[in-house]
Length: 580
Image (cartoon, rainbow, N blue to C red):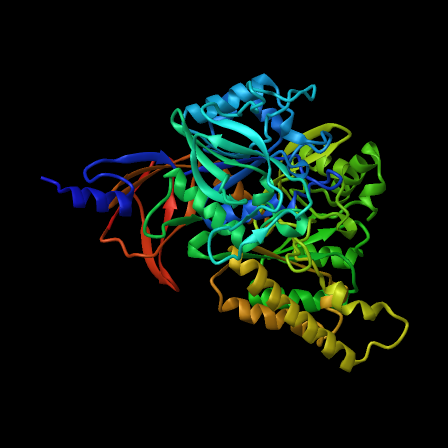
């Protein structure tokens, strides 16, 4: 007979009773957003950090505009729905975003949760009708998005709160600043509290509804970074997302985490060049590519000389992709001028391009729209900068765009490039003054330091993708300037990095995004069921070594820095069982 202590310990350590099986789908995340800025495919800082945090947890994340809230059959393909009434998260043509919501949207959200879905949202979501009227539930209580709680507004003037971990207590509002926020006054479990006078009203609550859960924030700025108007730093956001995921009950023990990168690699690296330069400069680049056996993309226009054009086509490791016909600023082009750039460049090269980079990395709404319409697989123009501000994503994402009230979620994948290209360091080569060897050595050293910082401090902590952006006329300017790139490649060889082409990475990411992984879990055994695609060299990281592995195909278990990684050729319909 099982003792009460045994049952209690099983619940603590495994979340399930001995002899019982917990079955669920590894969560697939959906974030409702139409992008930010001017609708050219960038997303808000909070969305970037959500993408990167869910990736660290081994979960796939999709972006979609709010139209999916009218399609319950599509919603059921996801397990976690992130909704925010912050303007920059979604439909930017509406000043308060998802605080204005139709009865149909609310009905479909409730059905999603009732059937086992999980939502992460704030209490302002759905509080207004599309016409702008406050939804009241009687006695001036706000109409709750999810039934079963009582919501009212409170003036949290001088309130403070503390995020998970070692973060200090943070005061949000000033002594004389009115801060009326919706607060859960009844119902749900409090996960995070405000400290306000002698009371502790909830800042984050979780409640059960049907088979699912709702995580309700008083304000979504709790999940938005300080640098963009939020109340938390990236480290605290990571802890907060981890806390929320733990509370869903759909987590894996033993540090188990799937990774899209091939053969147990922790990060990915893609080599790219824009066109420009003379034959000698191209030859220097070709030599390094051959020596390191480096798959490389050249983004091209017809401006390349016939001689260099033939050399590019002859290189086995080089893939030619689109960079426009006449190298314009796409933000100054209209709808048909934009289309012409793609059509004419494809005809010139006699090639159906699958990848693109905008000249001057000046991405545009019409440009993104036409790339998607023409069936391009990826764009690589939105640069990653997590030093001065948060821009771009260290992991790929499907692009949302909007313009003049029109919004669309694209199948096009954004694979963000590094922020500073080689031009930033070697641009003195364009000056009329001599670019001396001493000057070149100094700039090469600066560039080498930047490459290392970018990889080790920005890409590697997020298990992300580094896309090198170079130009033959700068990196290949001389035997000195090319040293920075070569030095970095030598260091990269010693890291656990998947070095691949942008096309391979984009195709793999598409499969990963559509993958569905079922989980059957008992205290000492986990069985995975795979549907939605095949991935060779699929990677499953874990902290403990399993006692037994059962799989219907080839696999290998390797030791890595903090545990083990299981590498196997994943095929839809097959099952993997791990016993601990």
